[in-house]
Image (cartoon, rainbow, N blue to C red; front, side, top):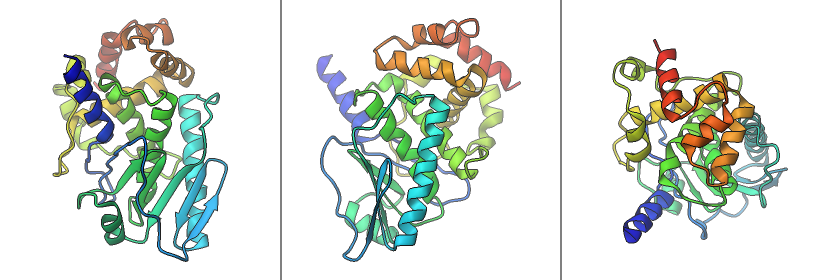
Length: 275
């Protein structure tokens, strides 16, 4: 049993995100969060720009500035949505943006479908239609793992992924609105949602084919429901209790008193909201 637990933890650590198709872009997002190691940086002559939370590497000073500004906006939005203003990163997060997919694949050796990858506290991606979405998604994972003290718990992955997609949807909407990346799955979510116990325990594995994932649609649906219906203060307390190792079922009741007493109650209320 201990060996199986260790294998599951390692699998979750090495595959932080499952690729899925989004709207308005052709990049899939994938995470590989490792404690150490880095991929090669950009070729000589590239720009480096430090900001409050990021060290950006890009080809061109204007490009680096634009990426830095967008990343800082993403970071501030994540802090607003999670109310984690007490959280302070241990150092600058690195964002490496390669010129194109060819350079990205050559230097990171990621699969052809990959649009972004995280290693330690660094994000590696490339210029493309989904660049801003990818950065927002991966940045959420970096913040999650650091806030959770790099603790890997497969049963919390639906929250981690749901929050990352939630922030990606906001980035896709320019930061002012959310673009629902899974709107086509809403009829299925209403008629045949994944039971909560399966959502928690049947985490999808990384697949090369970018199949629309009901698991992702439900994860982001529940997380957005907690934030927007339950409130950011309650969601912040929920994350804090998870950080302290509290059982999610109990953390829901403690964090959203008078609204949901358990994960089952949250699930039922969310399903009712879809009708």
